[in-house]
Image (cartoon, rainbow, N blue to C red; front, top):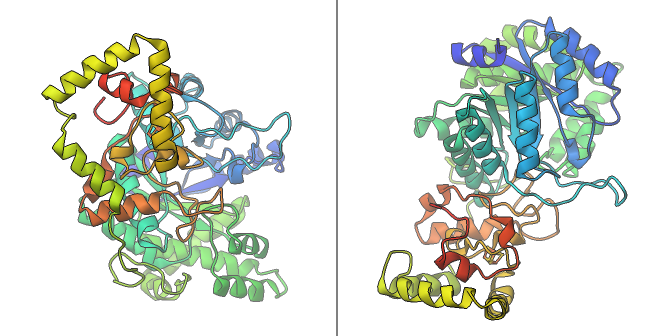
Amino acid sequence: MNPLREALAAGRFCYVVELVASRLAREARILDVAARLASCPGVVAGSVTSYAGGAPGHDPMRVGTAARARGLTPNIHLTCVGQDRHGLRKTLEDLHALGIENVFAMTGDYPTAPVGENRPPAEYDLDSVQLVALIALLRRAGMPFHIAVAVSPFKYTESDCVYQYLKLEKKIAAGADLAITQLGYDARKFRELQRYLDERGVRTPVLGNVYVLNQRGAEKMAKGEPPGCWVAPELLEAVRRESAVKDGGQAARLERAARMVAILRGLGYAGAYVGGTHDAGQIAWIIQRAEALAPRWEEFAAELTYAPRGGFYLYEGGGRRPRPGRGFAPVALNLLGRLFPVQRETWLRRLLRGLFGWVDRHPLLAKGLERVEMGIKGPAFGCHACGNCVLGHMEYVCPQTCPKQMRNGPCGGAHLGRCEVVDKPCIWGPVYERATAADRLADLRVYIPPPDRHLQGTSSWINYFLERDSRPGR
Ligand code: SF4
């Protein structure tokens, strides 16, 4: 029995409640909450976080198993932080052995823990799309996982926003069963996502994030913490005003949450993903109140408009900036590719295969070629010699220059085109702009598999012609 899967299949509006298993929360308390939520009508799962905000917490598998023993079906967050594909596979096999089906697959926040013994590596072997593909592979092998993925419609530049939607399509194509939005307080964006999926005939259910926002949370999010969560100055002001009253703003924030649930119901969302409170009484109140408010959802939607000024909306025309051209290098390299085609079996490809095969049989020459390649691609693209070149699939932007080394689109942490990890533009902005300029947006939907890490430090040219690398189609 999996109440989450059943509610979605039946089209019954449902609630998943986030259980933040951070180090600061006592595990016994989380389990007590789980026991109370289990008897809360409408709640079909507890979503147990992992690496929330970039810091390791309690083991989500242990917490999830214990929550299930208390009657609450777990939805286990599985991030790509600090585990390579083998570790992730092992975790999934363990989840299956425990009879846990629901997995929330995501890339994960960049680790924020201080340098020290337990500092997790800031390396990402897989991205979230590749993780979904891995889970789907195990599902085909008989492990009946139900895969949830994240999407953020609350992006206010064109590239951030459209790429989120493109990436969601990739996740669904890879095997996702359910999408859950990042938090945000903008009904126009909730509506935009729903329309995007409707227009493409995508029937994958979506849960809208309803975060019960207190003053402390609002103040952090107003500064962009944790990454991907953003609160507008006007909302921060409103929360501060609400918090000045006798109950500390509790009534107002619960009312806001209930109104957001009413909006989601009205828009046709499959359910709500409720966070920001571990109080089962408050969750039950929100659910009841939302039902009472349901007929007024459009009125509330018109009021929930917390967004940056001049932000981009896909269907409303605003926030679009002049589109830069594709740039010299992508145009020239594409032209070169057309003049000297090597992607098909041509005489040139056969010649180069023979030549690179010969070089490969002479280790010193192969190393020398790798150095030459690096000497060209390092300054030109910031190449890290991963050995599995996908520049041609990413508009000549190197994925290894992304701090999370993602190959299938931006994470949810970028804000107004800036990277969540380092103070520079998100690398996926130029990928989107160049693809749009070349009218090749559809190519960005192509799945890029994880690199073969054994090829690190070798020539990607040799690997390409000897068919050793990992790239789309291989
Ligand atoms: S994808 Fe790999 S080989 Fe290609 S430029 Fe980036 S690091 Fe270098």
